[in-house]
Image (cartoon, rainbow, N blue to C red):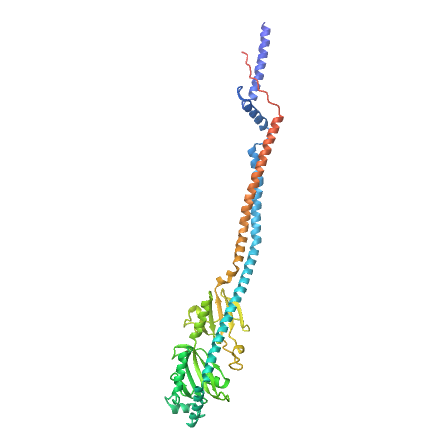
Length: 443
């Protein structure tokens, strides 16, 4: 009896130790579902338990896939944007230079046309004034007065008498007053011709015959206008300030000739006001927006300056000089000080050949200055192209980021589906785990 009890006790002891070892090995594991739990919960528990020990978690898979795709994508987009920006910089610079050259050529050609038009306007104006002067000099009353005055002065012994002797003999007298009706005729003509300020008629010896103003001396043949008209057939004087009229003016001298024989009987001088020339250029500027006109005489002194309103400190002043242009070019354009300047010269023989053989013309230079903003207006589409090119790297980065994000979402979705199906397949291939028996403790 005692032996039986000892054997039974040893068996119970070994059974208890075995159960205890199993309990300790299962310690820390997820407890099995309760006996009353649903079969769905039991299957979920079993699938999770079977898969947890062999597959990585889905979050880890998503992180690995996301980093392995996003990081190269970001690096590729950054490198692509940098490469594209570096490639576009010289292209943009070349396009900008091309734009400036095309704009300069286009706008410069336009300003050159304006300068040429202004020079032609000046030539037309002076040709008309010279024709007016020649028409006045051919008036019968002036021709007869010059012929008769020459005979009268010769009869008085003046003839070829020296100038200082004649001036000393005449004293304060500036005219013999032989033809007062011619004085009135000249005054009437000036009242109908707004361009001429004064007029003086002399005979073949250079003595005053008729005039519209008080002359400074009696003999005029020592004056440049008289000598030029008598010897060359036409004279255009330099632009000077006239103290009597208080205006800039130019002396025009034309010979008085016998209409039948062509014999020269005297010289007519008219004083042309330059204010009319300035008004003519002002009208041209008003008809074309964005330009300013300057006109310079052969000495480089300004006669017209529309930008300053013909300010006295710029007209006939050494402080305001023309832009240097190629001496052999009569027309053209160039860039000067950030502006574009079109230039042209007044014509020579082609416009004045009918007035005097070999006459070289005024020799004036016309410069038309345009605003820099007007130079690029015609090529605004190139500015838009360059701005678009500068935005290409940013647009490429945004497009790459959006496209990469979309691809990443698709890849993560595919990975999630694959992991889900793989997990289910692995779980289905494993046998269902048997529930562990509860340990029995025999007392």
